[in-house]
Each structure stands twice: as structure tokens, then as C-alpha cells.
Amino acid sequence: NLEYFIVPAASYLIGSIPFGYLIGRLHGIDIRKVGSGNIGATNVTRSIGKIAGKICFFLDFLKGALPVVLVNMTFEENTANLALAAGLAVILGHVFPIYLRFRGGKGVATAAGVALALAPYPLLCALAVWVVTFLTSRYVSLASIVAAASLPIIAALFFGLGIGTPFPLANSTVFFFALIAFLAILRHISNIKRLLNGTENRFDSGAGKRG
Ligand code: NKO
Image (cartoon, rainbow, N blue to C red; front, top):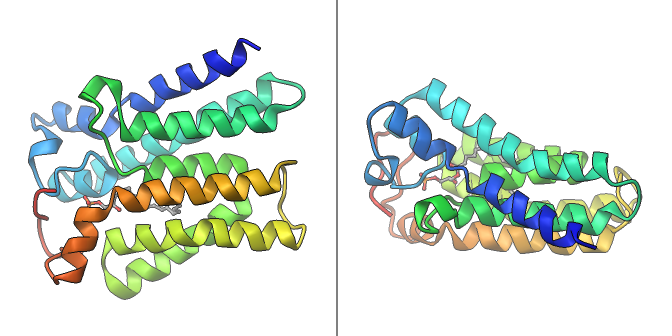
């Protein structure tokens, strides 16, 4: 069962590739020192521009989906546990990247990629929750927090109704979504503090504070 070591290790290294940081470097800035200081797509959009932000989101998202898709393609049976292990490892790589002294992003785009590969319908619903929350509040961070919290609930509903389960381990998947949502929300503590004291930046009103 060597794959239970190799797959998570390789996934962690893939997750560690800090696309937001690399895009910043290409533009001659250290993304960790501008805007919110986060290496995610939101801060790349805020600090560099819309196209760079979209590229960052796409690459961070793809990086999440890739290990899970590869596991499901490579291993014939019993892929469910290994796919979950790959998904967790790639998100941990993004949040605690070895190349940036373990100081990485908040794991929203990468977790969305993992979730798309594991359970596409629940992820699409969580995406809708993200869009509605963002359009009504104009806070990216709030949208990410609410969408993350909604994902395990939506997945439990879908699996409970027997819809959209391409996957044998429904209970483990719901638990897994709860775990990655908890991690993503923990990474938003500085955003939550700003939301509570009214200093969080709305998306269309300039740069955020460090944190
Ligand atoms: O710089 O602290 P900041 O204001 O940048 O950034 C806060 C932001 C950090 O996240 C990002 C990634 C941007 C993602 C945008 C679109 C995401 C759509 C995802 C929908 C489903 C989410 C499921 C999450 C499962 C844990 O928040």
C-alpha cells in the first residue's frame, strides 16, 4: 500500500505550488506584502488586476482537482479513501506550502477544485451560494465563509436524497467537506475580525489591510 504514502506526498507538493505568489513575482511584487497579504485570487485581483486574478483562481482550482482526478483515473478500485487523502493533502499544501515556509493561502479555490472532482453537484450549489452572498454583500471573504459552511450541508442533502453521488463513501465525503470548510473558515479569522468591526474591504473599494 505504498500509494497511501506516495499519493498524499505528491498531492501535498502540488498543492504547495504558490501560483498567487508566482504571479506576483512575474509582476515584480511580493503578494504577501500588499493588500490583505494573502496569496489567493482575491488579493491577486486586488493588487495586480482582474486577468491575473482569474489566472490565479484557475490555477489554484485546477491544482485542487488534479490529484483527485488522477487518483480516480489511475486506481481501479477502492479509490474513494485515496481520493479523499489526495484532496486533503493538496489543500494542506496550498494552506501550508513547503516553498513559502508553510505560510500559504486560505484554501478556498483549491478546496473548490477538490470538491468539484469529488462531488460536482454539491460544489455547483456551494458556488451559487458564494455568488449570491458576494453579490448581496460585496465581501469576498464573507462569500467564501458562507459557501464553505454550506458545502457539507448541501452535500449531506444531496447524498441523503441519493442524487449526485459519484462516490461510494458519502458519509466520509460529508465529514471531509466539514473538515475542509472548518480549515478554510479558520484561515479567515482576520477577515472575520474585520467583518465584525466594520473594517473589511468591500471588493470594489480598494486595497485591504494586511492580515
Ligand atoms: O485577500 O483575505 P482576502 O480578502 O482568494 O481573500 C479572501 C478570500 C480568499 O480566497 C480567495 C480565493 C477566491 C475564490 C473565489 C471564488 C470561489 C468560489 C468557490 C465556491 C465554493 C467554495 C467551497 C469551499 C469549500 C471549503 O476569501
